[in-house]
Image (cartoon, rainbow, N blue to C red; front, side, top):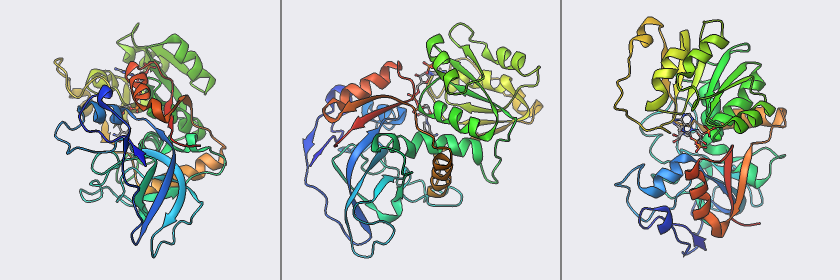
Length: 343
Ligand SMILES: NC(=O)c1ccc[n+]([C@@H]2O[C@H](COP(=O)([O-])OP(=O)(O)OC[C@H]3O[C@@H](n4cnc5c(N)ncnc54)[C@H](OP(=O)(O)O)[C@@H]3O)[C@@H](O)[C@H]2O)c1
């Protein structure tokens, strides 16, 4: 089979390599991968920025969808011919995250999905909604589950967003557009930032209520306050990281929730972050690390009921995997970038 193991770091170092096709063992499922979607994490992983000490070779990409082509002894959750996705953390099936459950993340701790065949535990796969193509389904495991968790769970005990809430999204990447789509299903209002007027217009077609260009208005928290009669947002889907966190603290309402997800602008900053809004507004800052299989199942039910389709920016062919990563690096995309592995 052909796969793209990271052998040394760098997008230009990524090469298709011929590897033996894995054989099923008891409890495992062999998947013919049809499509993979990219996450910012995959880009960092390939460039050696996520974990410079990661043992190589390692097949990248957490998110893939495919067809079950063989099952090992004792497998009952899926059958040959089923259409499935891998789950991001292979051991986080249900309940709260623990150190143990966080250990087997695809495309990081263990080999991922940028390969023609992937062998996963039967517990680590999930059926996806019937109305989705493989390309669409491949977008779900990381970005969509993360957005779902941030809106519907956001910690233990869960603190779900409510109808009528105001939710802020940042940029128009994978997590943010899923958060937009899921928030609209909830009957809540979405305010969104972007570097581009054109992307804001496209986001409005998906239901964005109001948009703000953060390049033109770096102090966009004032815009959120203006748009909420000075109250602030109920929930912020924080993907910007160190460069946006201070704005998020200012934009949140008293008692609001910041779901800390991403580090698009970096994980630290030379500008000090003033922490006092956290205490004065009794903010809840909740880290999000994707989500469990149970959350994925709940999300799939909502996607099915709403006949929702993920937003795909572009589908690349398998031999264009490096180009797809470079496209993500350019940040010109709107929604998810997909690599078609096989027809
Ligand atoms: N914690 C978790 O479990 C988890 C899960 C998934 C992703 N993440 C993290 O969440 C972040 C987003 O991931 P993704 O896969 O959705 O990324 P993505 O698809 O690559 O999103 C990139 C987009 O974000 C916007 N952006 C870039 N810098 C920004 C900034 N400083 N402020 C506001 N928006 C900015 C840009 O949109 P515009 O051009 O519209 O501005 C850009 O196109 C990444 O840091 C990723 O590692 C974390």
